Amino acid sequence: MSTFCRGRGISDASFYTWRKRLSEDRPVRFALVETGADGKVSAGLELLLATGERLRIESGADAATLRMALGVLRERR
Image (tube, rainbow, N blue to C red; front, side, top):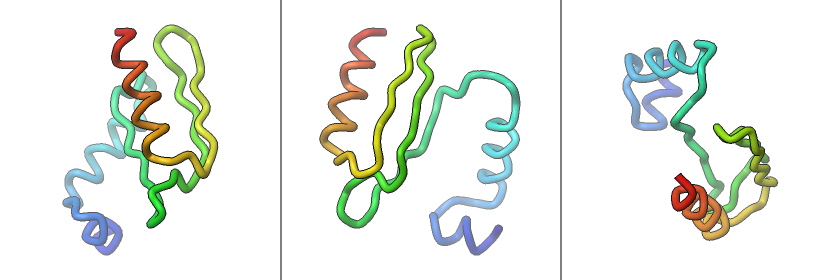
């Protein structure tokens, strides 16, 4: 795990803290989305919102589109 964490600039302790927190059966209020060198989402993802709505983001979505979608969600809170 040390190599994985070091390569991403995080401490082992932080990794294990997040792993434990994310394994608990409760809503997640934080998500890390990585983009490739081209600035596009490398894997599709789906967010289940507190309202019950689902937001699907297909792989290949560009960072500007993702920022726009997140901005709209923030305005709705």
